[in-house]
Image 1 (cartoon, rainbow, N blue to C red):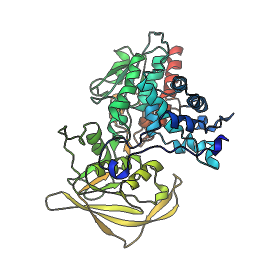
Image 2: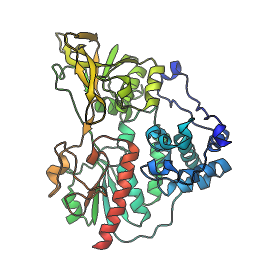
Image 3: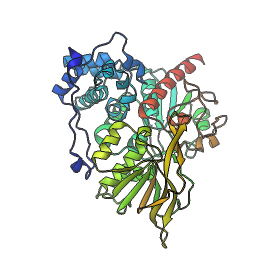
Image 4: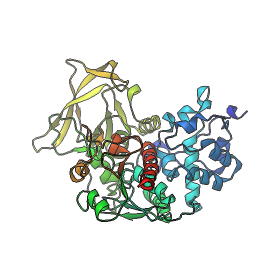
Length: 461
């Protein structure tokens, strides 16, 4: 029986070795391993995994083709719904989505859907299997703001529909959070991200970098003077949050966004680059999400003793289980039920420590997680040279201030319908700019929904 086959383990770098380099942690499946893992799929008549996928990939169909050894067919099936399989296979939280809904997971281990998607995506890149469709231009122009996952997904679908799509990116490199936010050891930039984007170029998508929409050009100008029929905002959420405690303006306190941008986009980890990045001897990262794991594991690789401080217990950690597991293997220290109350500095204005208090869990809050409550009289100090705040991010308010009729909520997120329509006619939005910081695959799903809505909007004009 297929479900009696044990899940095929994925080969990885040894923890002691990978904690000193920025090479990819997971090696992924080879052909033999992929086919064996694919043979575990039950090909359910009503596949729950498909419903749990934000972009609704036909998962049983592509897995069946892997089992048959027909990787080109598997690639074509995925390409119908996803333009970034190598990326999604690496960074999506499959355990909470497709794999979390796999029938096999009830009594055994679910099919390794993410690792199989990665295998197909990588095979496609290596074999230049583009999965492209024949495109007939329809004469309409659409602007996409931001080259992150929501923007790329929206641009891909619109290009396949025949639209003349131009993506405007504020930074000098394309990819958004895929490039500046996710470390090289989880997502190789040149090997994977750049090549996935190049496939969109082959679809006809145009890219313009170093364009800050709201400064270099406005949405109003794009629509009123540049002839764009619609605009999609996929600008993400890059404005970091801080705690508002004493000492946050000391030297050595940085947001995870700044820290990871220096390390990833500006390649501060590479000795051949001149980008400065300071970690001292001991780094404390405040937070428990995926960004916190990325920051603390990066600091470890840069040579610092690295600690996670999180105010809830391990059961409430929002980070992926795989990332927590890898961090522990690499020697990251986790101090749970701990909350900072002040950052301590020396006479020269540099961080010398973190004052914390112990916490205990009370009743669940709106998120369903138990609320942390401070234990009176439990204050203690942690010595450190650097404090990295990984507390989430908000959208940049620039677009609202420079676009007529574009409304945001109290958190600064753009107000949009489920299909992406904003309060400004012809302007659509999706991903982190609407929801706040979330996952790559959810952003892609929002981009795809918006592409469909844009198509319907333009055709109805």
